[in-house]
Amino acid sequence: MTAKLTAGLPPMHPGELLREDVIPALAIPKAEIARLLGISRQSLYDILAERQPVTPGMALRLGKLCGNGPELWLSLQRTYDLDVARRELGAEIEKIPTLPAA
Image (cartoon, rainbow, N blue to C red; front, side, top):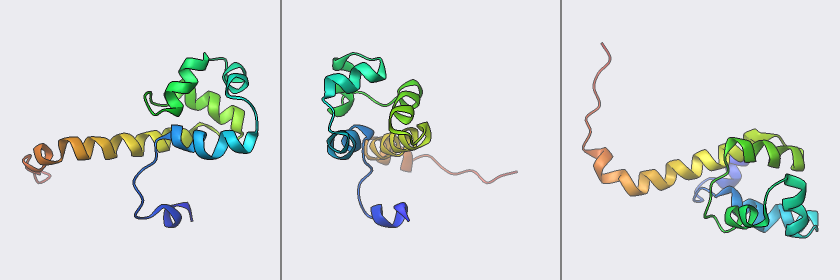
């Protein structure tokens, strides 16, 4: 059902989900969330500002804190990264031929 809800929307950086939905719902200060995650406030702020990706280690931390596992966070990051790469490399990628399988 999630795919239907997000169909047509640009991929979301995991920091956007944290910033717009998760942190407000938790009603806990960002500094406390950083402490609970075992990371610096700056690391959290960099993710929230979409300056840093969610790494597998961070996905484990977020998944544990939020109770939804790391897969959601890694999937969001992967989808976002692929979208950025497609936009940046689209013309170059189009020039590469697709070879038939032997």
